[in-house]
Image (cartoon, rainbow, N blue to C red):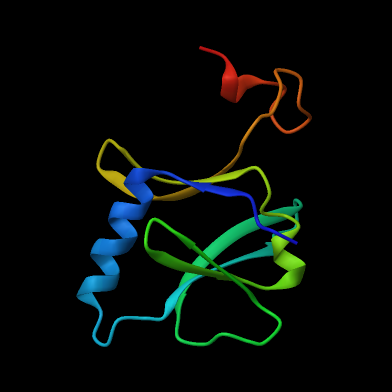
Length: 111
């Protein structure tokens, strides 16, 4: 299954910056899902390990890795890096495909 995740320029820039600071640089970014008690939550970390069953893909020159169980939950997800006031960090958001999607009832597409 092909993972359909959108990674913003801000996220790619920050990931690249942090990867360059790590010595030795990691192989890539592992994106995964877990049950946080309220449903599926997304997370990520740097990794040097790739399993034979992992899906590996390149976005903007950065290697992303995910396991088969997580990949089905990554379609139509946006990974962004945002700064709000003095706080900044990576966020995962469901990307709406219509104004009436079940995830946010179209709020992410309203302007």
